[in-house]
Image 1 (cartoon, rainbow, N blue to C red):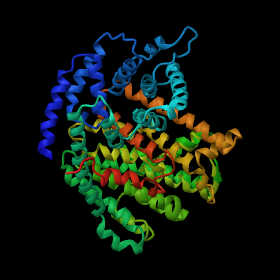
Image 2 (cartoon, rainbow, N blue to C red):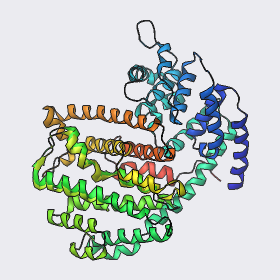
Image 3 (cartoon, rainbow, N blue to C red):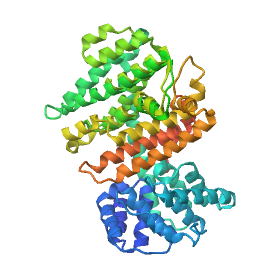
Image 4 (cartoon, rainbow, N blue to C red):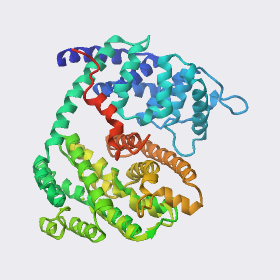
Length: 530
């Protein structure tokens, strides 16, 4: 299977380098991206997109103009959106085109940045028309439109898009059978790798199972052991990176501590901004994104371990611990030494994350609600652990991750705040009704309801608007030139896509059975029988 795939890769490489016409280049690149093959041709695709960008292309084909805009922005080119104004009539309204062109415009428009009114209008126009015609479309196009209405192309998790698009592409009359065969082989090879990785991450703490009657004292000691292993694997020249990973956990703990304070004081943030300032840190997305940059080869297994630790930590501080126990855990994590574990109860034994959880515990015990969304976000976005999880994926990126980059990550930059904000708000929308059944939970939804005297449904709709605004901010940062490797921004966007997927229909992180079919599709069901 591997040998066959290598032969097909070279055939496709010739197609990529041999494409000379703009339409051919655009259609080939988007096909390879959606089938998960573009990583095999990064240099060739970069060269082709550079050619497309430098070529004065004034085509009146909405489909091709939209596709060009989409691919260039996705690849980091800050191309202007004014090009779409030529597809409006004299009254400033978009002209109706064929469904394929409208779908391309719809997907392109989601790479918008703040202030791009023409793209905001394009989304409203195309969505309304696509919803009307959906039931009358032929099956293959209907599948494409339905997927886009659920999640626009740019926001889809890459591997899920690949697995979903292969059968769609197979039905297309204009498909290339060589590319199709390679896509199937490539996915099945990836599936084998994923299964091996899954085996690794499900065995790593086997011995800890014996300690479960003691509950979670083992958590703290396992974190220390993981840090030691990281230092050994990184070697003397790179072991300093582990310090940064510890600092990321402190941020998470600080945010959780503030939310605990809100809970204890029965306090609700007065605005969404107050809430987001704290609570988006509690999701852990910042930590997950940054931990990818710390420097080991097995990125996925290390990131998975970090995600597991953050999940356990959040559950301990948010649900199982008393206020006193949560504060002991926070104190131990601020110290980061084995002796500190003796301070903890038997089920607790990782700074940013704990600080955030500690604050949330204080909120809970004091029945305090943040006065603003900003106050809430400052704490609660850290308790989700998204920052920590994202950073953990940077662990295996080699020499491109320098000390300067790690210092920058610890400033909790705006790009990572966008990730944590989106993750928190998506989580709150799907989980707020369930969590309000508890004694106290200061979600962004509750904060907005109190701040603006509105209903839960009204608050959720406004928070959805805030999510869209944050996506715009993230895209703006994504397109902003920087000396840092582009892979950092791409990784943060990837983690954000995952958060968007997890909370798209329900709180799938809590109710994991809802993604059972997706897991089977990725790990069990092949795209090809051998």
